[in-house]
Length: 343
Image 1 (cartoon, rainbow, N blue to C red):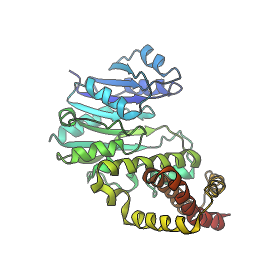
Image 2 (cartoon, helix red, strand yellow):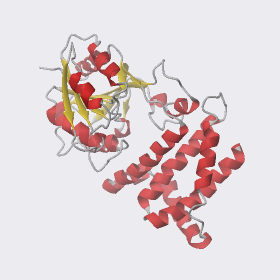
Image 3 (cartoon, rainbow, N blue to C red):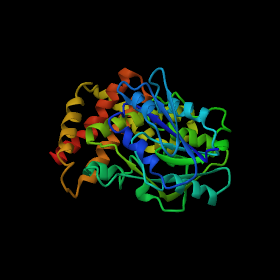
């Protein structure tokens, strides 16, 4: 029987997926494991690559979704198939270090209680070009991962259930009445939502830095600002499903500002198109900092990425027409100041 089932949702990754599959063939463990790859209706040759690959040292199970549904649905399909005592979640842009699988298994051998999950370390690979934005989002900004603040051997809450590199006892995972919530159609907060429900059953997330995963996903300010907007939308969905998380995810400042923006919208009546040129201008400005060494980039990125996350919160909270007007007020307050400060 396989010691661990690795679940990997795949989407349009045909250009680099073979290297990931080969990396699992290079694992240094003699213990058997399986990789369950679920193609989420890719439009490139991802599925063909998966079905043609012949692993030498592990079992490869390939499934294909009839329509693109997002990583939550893809993972659920993998969970339904998984039979090993341990389940490990990874991404199709994650390249495992040679001892990756072994380190997860050994960590669970040390921490045998049913409710303990092992969070490994996900980092940028040394051969991927790094820009200041990427350094920020995995550094002090922590908009992507919070490893900058994590300490080896410490426990962390449900918000750190990073499905790029986390393993859990399969029986504990399957004890839920449903797994990943497929209402989360984007890759944002669907993992935290699952972990929150598991936390009610005693989930403990232990950070162990030795299972190392390399994240091959280049970002710039344009791509990550879109990611932040989607994260804001999904944060609203999380709070709608679990209102008790409102202060933790949105915070009191969000609630205060939301009422203030509504008040200003009624009396100031901003032009709904007035913020679009500000967004384009500040994004263009920020992109010029990406390949430079600037002492003040963290402040710029913090403000700008928080803007796009909050924009998602706005559009996830208010109706379409009201959201546009509230967004205009917010953009004038935040982006206008950034353009003046940096321009």
